[in-house]
Length: 309
Image (cartoon, rainbow, N blue to C red):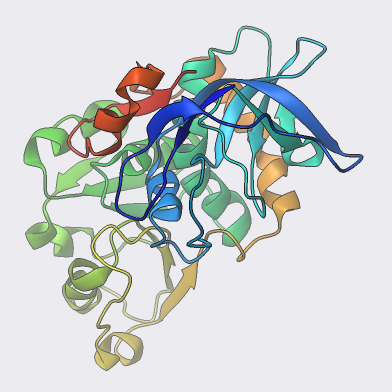
């Protein structure tokens, strides 16, 4: 079979022949890959910069995919704790870490949406006690995951959603997706009285936004839950000690390890149904195997790139 293979850290994948995958456990199954999303997690794991990366090469990248099982049914599958990837014609899945997709599901849309969508979906449903009527700030709302977070927060009943980002052109699009206000980082204090922050940025920008946000709160004793999800601006943030003393701030993380696989999987059917029904706006572009090397380094596109073997 053929696969996209990365042979060394810092190099893009190359489409080439690769050994056929073999199922070994009783819950494993060899499946045909229909579509696999080129997510930030896919890149960072493959490049060895994510905390779950092994740093072993060569590797086939890809952490999830829409696959066809031998019976013909379509599944969305997550690959974890394995040296296999999904940027290949075939792979091996653990059936227990997959869900059957609804009839009419578009493999490319599902592959594009599930990974970025589940970050906020699972955070709001499983990581914190979010209630309808609360107010949400999405920090880093102009990326794929942030755009979906705006929509998902509204879907779950957020009274107000504030979208914060640097790309003013993309910010201007977010009110049409449910954002009540679109703000630059310099304007973050206008969202001071939110109840939840979904942070896809971290690093210096997140730390720099904390004090203006907390200082401007009408009631500093009102709880503010800061959910750290992504780290596009850096893996470490210089959080000022005053941020933890001058207001009722709680910082939690949501990601691999902070929740069980069972918690993630329990939410996937509802998310897949929402994508299939068209309830969430998904920007996706299919990439053929011959173009994966160029697509790998395309960080400018506002579409989610999807590898289609």
